[in-house]
Image 1 (cartoon, helix red, strand yellow):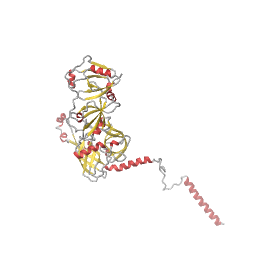
Image 2: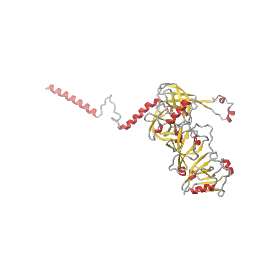
Image 3: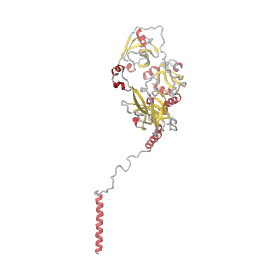
Image 4: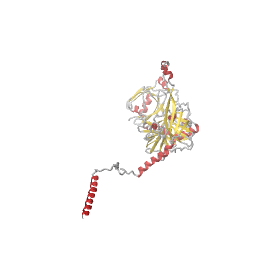
Length: 500
């Protein structure tokens, strides 16, 4: 009996102890020294759909495949220390001036794209311009000295070569098939951060007029992208999601010198043509039509009877150029080239940049209300070129002096007859002088300014204010095509709408 009581008592005590432990632990009063509090959720908060996952995987695959075809470039050179001549005599007796180095070392960096397995690399002209030494580093950290093969300042492209074999070249795509909105990756070495990959879309095509290339023959036909491009990206690859290089990164639109939303790349179709020429000849054998052109605006389109605003107008012809010999005339509108419609000068220039001297192109022109087809064989550029004369001398200049000057308030323009001194100073044989233009009037908005000479209206020469007045009166509610000339001899066309 006593034994049963003893066992019962022990059992009750054990049960009490176990229950107490469980109870206390459940209220948090006992903590294990090895327990770690849980952090983060047990499951992802979002289940990414298959399409988004595929896009992410595409970025990863393209980055892995293309990054090894991009190189880091470091260049070194010298910049001159210039002291104004009028200060040199003052400083010449100072020891520090005598010891001042005449040149200061400089270093720059950029990117490049491997385009052959035996070491040819494409980059920007501005990356290697003036360089004394060029160093190339691959993704596997091998470093080479590079030889400059050739440069093309008109497209800002260059080719260098390293002594290496069995390299993996990039696949060069077809930039003509690129479309606005398409995903692209920019791969390069911005700000010393080697082999950086950024993503964005194609924001625009055929972007020109940026004046990044300071030459009248410069070719600006850029791909615009919002993929981040910074200093050091120059010469790197812009690739599509198939891993094809469709552009060579070249510049950024920025007020600070760093990325502010938009970058620009040279279309690979232009780059391929340039690179092949540089490798084979050491220079570019580019063909030229031999014209100076300007985009057609709405007023010009109305004045020549176009059904819509399109094309570029021929403003001057190069003497002995392909266009002049093929019968193209001043004032012709180039509508298309080889079936490709033209809307801006860079549409024409970018296409011609992929051609060589000797190649033939077919132009569709608009002249005197009719379409005209012309076949032109491109010619090389002449370094010393003359522009064709646009006005033939008149033996007898008869000017109607019944109306010497007139103001047109509805368009904000005043014109007057040319004096003999005006004819001599402007080197013209006919025309009327613009003596005043109202700010923000229609003439001002069309680009007319005081001091310009109007030599033609609708491709017909005028000699007096009276002739000008008659043509303006006849075209109320329509538009006139004016040819104007400045004091430096530069001529251009202007479309001017005349209110009813």
